[in-house]
Image (tube, rainbow, N blue to C red; front, side, top):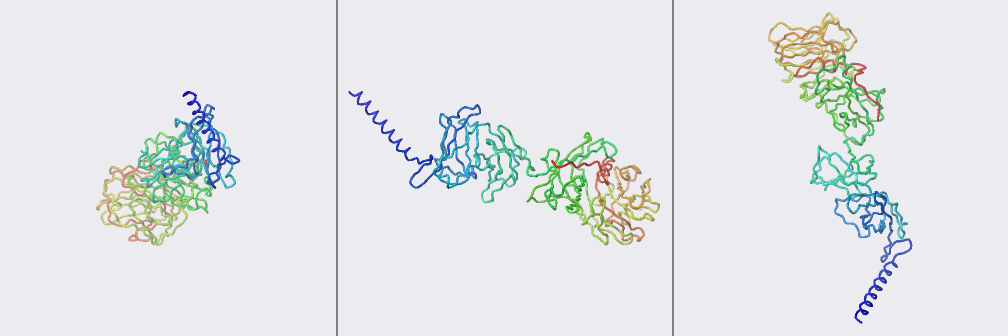
Length: 549
């Protein structure tokens, strides 16, 4: 009797449960939408497979707004989340229109799938929307440079649960990695920080593939990339030793560069090492997008003797970035530079010493590299105030200049710094020879004279190297004289003059053009001199600009 009563009670309870279930299902309106009061929702239904092609059971399925920020702390409405059944199927509901993603995560968090760009509008409410079958795959990773001012911020891929808290993450070599990234296309990777505008770190869409790492270098958004190749052996002799802190000139023109692929002012130009990631210091001496020519200096930390060809990367094609031209980083005081005067549109010293020039009548004219300065041979000159950095004493130093003489009929000073006690000068003598003069404290003048005669109307590059009390003179990369023992103490406490010293009779003023005068408080090797000449001379084949990639 009791057993029959127990069985009857269980049967009655089962009927009640089925009735309740039937009542709940009857609330579903045509098309699979659900109505609760006056709210009509759209239903999204689909199925999920494992990577082996079988039903993915108990996978977490989330309906996420396309701009969902996993670091915001927001919770999802209950109908927006579900777990797949034994057939790998799921059912989600939303009463809100908008753009969504469906994120699917396997029960063991090892497989992911992402359905992107699901648009729900008012016409979809009250309907069932079938989703494509999703297949789980291994997640990928995205590695990005740590953004500036990262304290208190986080990075995230909107519309996913992928994020990293920058306060707790440990960057490696300035890079941060976002893991658990589902496969898909992403046009936004956002940096959010309280009290500041959210910043998109991407300017181009990226594709994340299953199980792969996508390293985003700092220049992934630059659209045009070229390879710059240096051929040191083309200088006339292979390097026997590495050269460090070398300022390399790169010329761009219509033959090797499309100026429409850069901003009109060249502000988006960047140069890196061959890896395309490590930035190099840059100075833009001249950028003429209309005339289609540019003169760019890049500081190379090492030109390797063992390399027959060494490459750099030149990048352009990004809007809304500030220029990074920084002359003092190229003509670095760490390399001994105390003065670097391009003598173009301005007379600023490109080195960190700011030994800037003051003009007295010279004119800006087209030069060998960019703009040069023209002198009339009478009373035009450029003066640089005396400074301790320009008094070399008995130490090593290196002086160089590009010049083109219009007249070689008498002594013509290219530059001079002298007082009653000592001096150093570069000049063309009356016989058409180039001479370099160093003198100290009443001693007899010490000269180094070129073997070759200087011709009017031709560009020449001259170098005076002082090392260990011995002087050497190079013209166009070739040793002309020395090394000779000088042992002078060159510390004239006077202005430095380009084009002629006003205290000297006018006949000694230079007549012609000067460009790219460089002074250093350290000597240079003959190989440095040869490479300088080979990279700066006209039609310098040693530097090759490749096509856009």
